[in-house]
Length: 203
Image 1 (cartoon, rainbow, N blue to C red):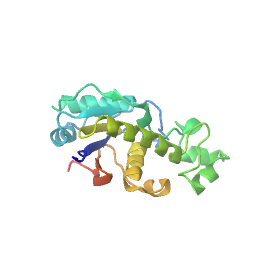
Image 2: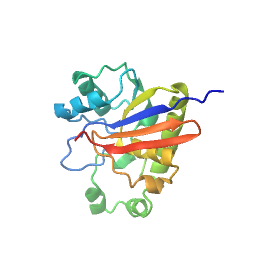
Image 3: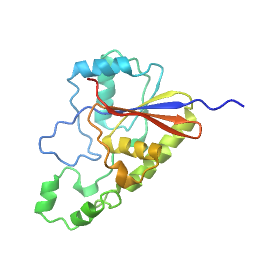
């Protein structure tokens, strides 16, 4: 009986979102800065050909994909997967943490006490997001077993994917740094996962 081949996830965080005020972006559909053509060229050479392409559906992911194609990476039409969306920060989206502290938002102290499980007003907790991402990742891994999957997504989504691969609690996953336009590689193996690299930058 032959073993199921590995499925290789290439997680690319979207290009940076210009935001000098450092607002809580969450699911706001904001444009990103794709002007760094050199970085896109480096990623276009590093990412695999003939891959499955998935993204969350937000503008910044689509623009990042367009910049990869302009840099010479042939890509199929992207599959839009809402399960890969960034964490929903509800009514806090578009505000800054300083704004929320200044108005003494009553939900803020509880959030900082346990940011992994606390739910922002009208939003979702990171722990709930992890479950959502996990269901999507497992479904796509089974559907495209043995393939390369390029997933253009968000920092929170990639932290959740790492938590699934390493079987760590949500609190630990929040410690991962995921920079804009960084690459994280996770392989689904028969019976487990392998983390090949985290937060790779094309330097």
